[in-house]
Image 1 (cartoon, one colour):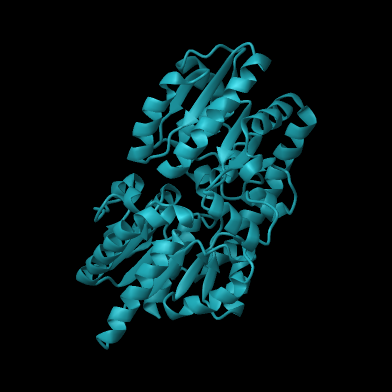
Image 2 (cartoon, rainbow, N blue to C red):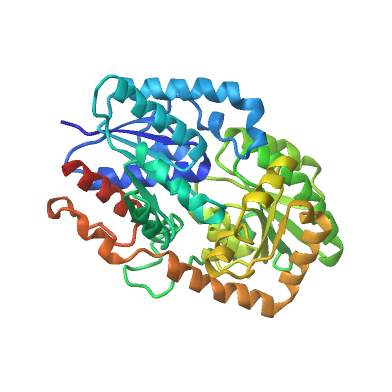
Length: 425
């Protein structure tokens, strides 16, 4: 019997995690796997026919959700119905906890009402309980509708287990960028990717003396529309400090974002190169060609550490969302490298401090000061030392499912093997 897996991802980073999980599960499974659910372009390449565009539920924030509540309720109902019709052996949700947890709760409730034992529920990327007041206590409630969580930070699994929630530390998803680029053997001492910066410049007609700044405004339309004008005004302020200046704007694989950016950059204050999504090589080539990066807070801060590209992290949200974060957050940083090292290695400009003048000043310092650059580059190695899962994690793969291509450090392989092992218990 072919195993059926229903998988839900609600944003670009989750789509990539989901696609890698699908690929790993297909490689490890002793028989072909059928998939259904919600995902984006990356998951569709692995064979998923998404029930609706993933972008329809890619909404971040608290007050930002209010105008979309009616649509989200419709999409939630549609997703539950699709899962019940598919009759999956396994359900996996990836991040996007607001939508994912409501979906899992409703699905489990319906199976319970029918007197049936539903499929096991897995959730990939445990909520950042460590960042919020009372976060650890809220983990206790997850065990009612989540059977197992995959943790991307080393300290998360132990806390989850102590709260009665089965968990596995699989490592950070960006580790797979290195493995997919085939620039690391299985026992390499350093996790990093060196792109082809000169080739990128030559391809786009950028002179060797030009300062390139990678700009990453986000993956959701709401954050891109909010941040892009701030980034544009920042570049305007930096023009006088550089004889030649080019912005390499990285475009997320989101059709709404792609359409918005293609129009918005027509009146950009500097020359612009739009870096398309879909190719790790092109992304890291652009990083290598850049002197610094300016990014909206998110997974990309870890990717920039992988590229050893010094960066500044920016973040703005609805005023009420920002107020909630100030009131409820218990960590002083927003970017993961800073949180892991408990140090402001990466400059952050948050909320009302996220202004063009502040960002321009931070970027200029990082461009000109070699000591600041070295400090951030050296810290990146320490970050990845902490994000790599132990090789022993893969010992739970049944011998008959082990394949020669298995890399013991690949997070998606560890997650896929855990799912297969769970089904056999």
